Length: 229
Image (cartoon, rainbow, N blue to C red; front, side):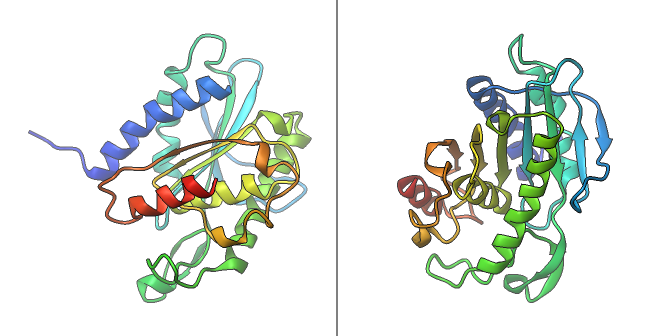
């Protein structure tokens, strides 16, 4: 009998979690298209456009070494699990991280939102790379707002390193966002808060989910992030 890989099983479980979070906070989706241009340079991304009047947008960031493809393929399933009145009305946006050298992996080039120096809880963190990634996601938010989606109807989410970025974007935001969904993740530069909070960061809604058998991002990191929030 064929067995699904841990990554596949994790993504399948994520469908239920994402759809539940969006139903509680509000969202929707359908059809895949590649992103176009904007006034600001945007990352490459995969988008699922709404099939009825748009009610919200969700920007979802993948983990280190991954790409938008795997997560984007799940979004129709997430959309199908949403309740009537939400189904089909969300724009799902899955950007690709730039390729960069990752110190933890011996300087190997791979998709990453920012550098990772170690897996130590008190190790050095890439503050500059993180800020650059925040600005890249803010550019996507700008595009959504310019297209007519109120910032209060935009959810930021991600898995692992993408979830770390999602938490940072929402906490530092100078405008109201609907919320943050982060799986198997952590809060980077946690010691910078609350001083680093944006004007609306403390008002956002958060859903954090973390497996207690995670062998990459320690469950303890997730617990500390939850405690800090």
